[in-house]
Length: 559
Image (cartoon, rainbow, N blue to C red):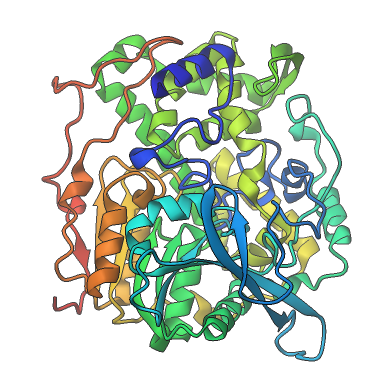
């Protein structure tokens, strides 16, 4: 069934719709690992997304008004009411805590930080819960309740799952902008005025102090929710940008943490611009995989050259033609730009079953047929649920000031780096968020039992980032899943490792051998067939013997 849907998507240029394609274990990948696309700045200004690399341009993918929730939730009149959320049939508990927007002005504007509790199936420990932290920055944890519930199903047997919409996201004073209806296929993102669009967005958020929506204030909110609900200890699971939030919780409130899992790790030492190199790495690994897989290489022997050919053509200017809309199927105008081309491919790198579509899409684009790419492009057009106003508040306060002259020069050598730098500077010049203290970027020193998970082919947070985060973690293990992309626990047995960590409270006996299971998808050779994965010499085997695939441990660890 899954392959038939992929075939249909390829032939018609249709997106792989939410609830259709599922990853390992039947998880919806759009609301799981791949929904968390931004990994500290990857989506700033629509970075490699549906439109140009400016925050204003990316905001046009959203029709949400700045104060509206991103989906319907039964609003409690008081904390601890019952509610239901999309994709979860159980009756849940929902509520909110009221906090000052600016902690230094406790009598000033107040905002509501909303939470949902997925009660444990066998609630034999009322003093602990697992807090699952969404990525972005800018995603709603509550909107991702269904995928968290599926991935953490073993944890939920014994522990409540706590979801909090971080300030500026979802129901917690959402910072997003409505820029009206636009045709995302027809728009020429090369002509968008990034500065002007960012200013329009900022003007819509005039009622909020955007300088108060960074990670540090958000962690204080999380702690307020914990205290409000009466949990003595939390287990943390953070994915992508959520790993930054988890690390800050480790730094500020270690006494209230039992265990921590960091999945798709953003180390405190890493600044936003570094993701440019991670994206380039993801592209390079795709080309390498196709070259080393016999059938893919035979069908697409010049894949990298064809990619460069398309980029060169689009660099000269956008291509305009009539296509079938990948969502409605109706004839519509397409203005194919370099940003759209990069964005379609980059987003497809996030999940193995969609990654398998890319070589055929590139090959067809080189022949002048962009229809197969449109299904992949459509995956980028909703911004993955990002509250881009909040997103800018985070990266403009926590990341842009880390860019050094050397990083600027390096960024100029690649399209990804240059466009990211330009858009960041334009957006942040409007947001005017004061930079965090230099100590913010110091590695986390902790002896809390911590599991770190990296995917070898992750196009956003490579394994080397996990190693950086390990620097001062003295009671930790870092597992690298050789065939996983972004969000290892959604694609492999890692969700069982998380449950084991929560159950035992120790990383000592965690064994990542199961992560070596080959979960690759066969590359599509055309719109109707895939090549079989075999053990032939040209197909790479599981690199289980390599040292980098073994768990690394903290320098001071004694397990």
